[in-house]
Amino acid sequence: MATNRTFTMLKPDAIENGHMGKIIDMIIEAGFHIKAMKYTQLTEGQAKEFYAVHAERPFYSELVAYMTSGPIVAAILEKENAVADFRSLIGSTDPAEAAEGTIRKAFAESKGRNAVHGSDSDENAQLEGAFHFSEAEIF
Ligand code: CMP
Image (cartoon, protein in one colour):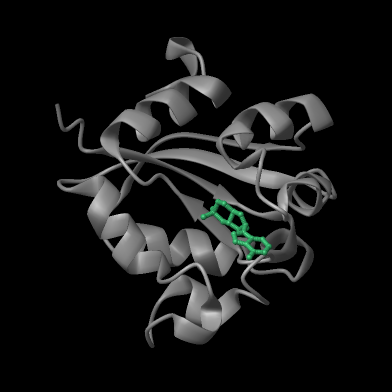
């Protein structure tokens, strides 16, 4: 069932490079409502669990090291057609392939250090949101 919600993280490179405010602005300007948000840093255990689906990939240890290297902003966003619309807003995983006007085109450094995460399905949006937020933290 479509929830009209998606989950995002502004990744360590985006924070480190000073793009937090601009990215949040682009998200709000695109019509997403912030239902929950926190500034936090993932532990190694959390990053491994969050990216468990990629555990067999060659970039897994690099991904875990990168995602724990500094603070992130985690958020639950709401909008009609949230998952698909947010993936359009962020653009392709590889910034070299991301469309003009997308967040990754503007701010991502590389396929690995790609500034933002966006859930790839309603089911994952629900799981990922619940991974980071309790019901009392969602408004
Ligand atoms: P995201 O799609 O948010 O979630 C999986 C992440 O794995 C992806 O963003 C990138 O940060 C990372 N990733 C995907 N492909 C590669 C790759 N080829 N090399 C390094 N990191 C990658």
